[in-house]
Image 1 (cartoon, rainbow, N blue to C red):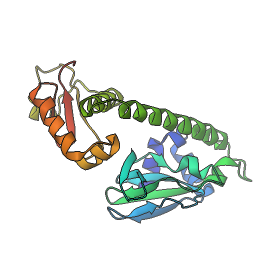
Image 2 (cartoon, helix red, strand yellow):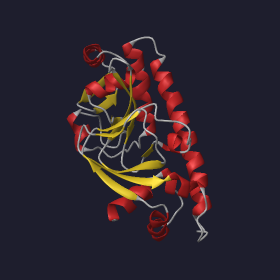
Image 3 (cartoon, rainbow, N blue to C red):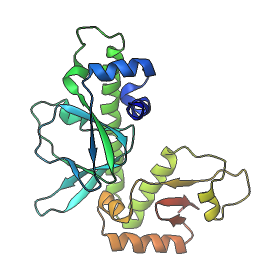
Length: 242
């Protein structure tokens, strides 16, 4: 149960709710945990769902597939984040996306009807949960708008710069240099590091930005040669304005 509590404490859905309240709340919401292996589908396009997924551990991707089986990553879900919220809140809508485990993962499913309707015991913190759900749905709408900003860029380089700039701004940038920072050979101690990680490997990043993987890899190499950025696997540093 401790991992579930930790994930809930990180979640916007449980913002402002204390640990002891979360323990009671998870029982009230009939929370059920399931485990998935890497590559296993958690939800499939066309499914009907009445539960919100809260990721406890691992990473899962929300993907959109076309008729021919080509997939595009809509979002990467990290521990403490939720998925299928909007679909769970829309009883007459089936899933227009699929959800797949990018790593071995654990998911806590919360019955949405128990979220939206105050329980018979009239939990004092239930109204906060409903408010948090509204905030969560709004934030996901904003995140989708941000993705559209990346996709509407004309070139692969512009898409990469748009995405990486947003990631650098979203993540907590620390003035303390990490081992990964030192790998990049950053400047003097105390200067602010712009080294950050993204939740995608190369293929996943290409899918997310709707570009060819080989074109993306080639463009990253050119950007490194041009002194725009440095990278190693999924860790990046932006070096200069372009």
